[in-house]
Image 1 (spheres, rainbow, N blue to C red):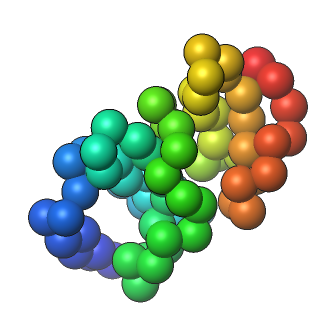
Image 2: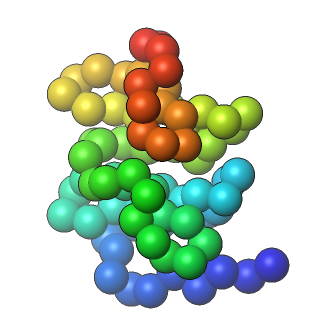
Length: 75
């Protein structure tokens, strides 16, 4: 299935487990396939989801979040 992501983002990653990391103004968040922002722009780095978790960085800390943006565990 092909998803079109509009040019409103500075950076985009591929969809994984229904979400894609996208960046705007140097912060990453996650959108779903309908382009709805699910997890707000707040991370300086973000990786795709794998087994329900994504590794992200914020405030010089790296940790894992779930698909609702809750911190699950530190790296």
